[in-house]
Length: 98
Image (cartoon, rainbow, N blue to C red; front, side):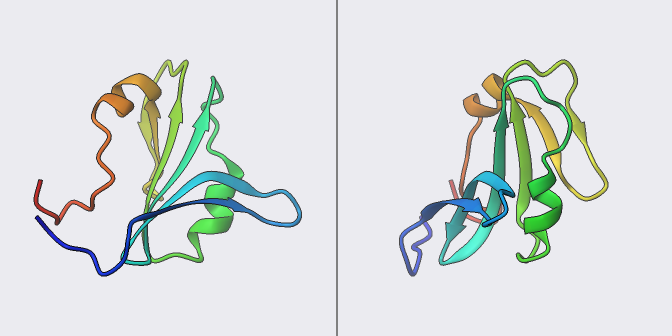
């Protein structure tokens, strides 16, 4: 199993003017995933456009409880149904061993 130089960490992103995303996952102090959670809103959260420019290509995921249609945008943002996403949740980067 891969060892990390530092503990994995979980953060909340919010600016003074209210732009926010629910979770920023970091491994070795490197952002790997930005996650927003919604109940039924399939519109991509505005925070993705704002915060993604500050990080080096993290995986962007918006999970929606009442998701009628999953979608992936050209930016890489993925809209996914909450329950199936939770069932397969893996916060480790794709290049790490299971």
